[in-house]
Image (cartoon, rainbow, N blue to C red; front, side):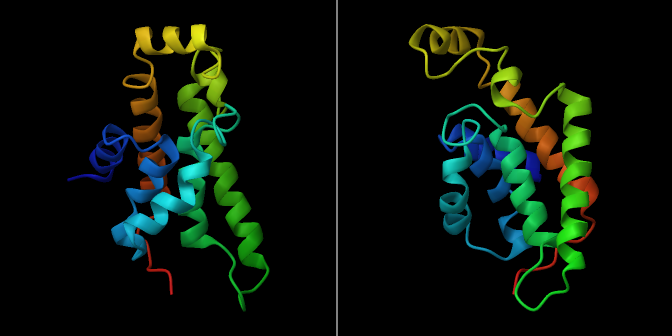
Length: 152
């Protein structure tokens, strides 16, 4: 099963876009799925369903942070490098999708407005657009990381 298929599998189980993208990398990150699901839960729906940064983007940035990020005892240059990778990811995602903003990606519709939510559901945006964003996020991260090293 590919990471993209894993991400869609999590999404189909009711996990949000952030959870789906980050947890698709659990094996390679050597981290328990349940921990990654919990860590990324609040980032779905564009940060706690506020429709800011797309959850697929947030999940991808967490995966990049776990791979490249600065930890205790690491040189400060790792932080700058991680920011560069984050910018590279966001640029690639924007080129494919036009934005990294959840509301923009959902045609300007507000998931917290009952009428807009009905439109999102009737248009099938979660099953079409959000699937695409999750797949794109996973693919871009895969292209950026050739070998994911386990977090120690």
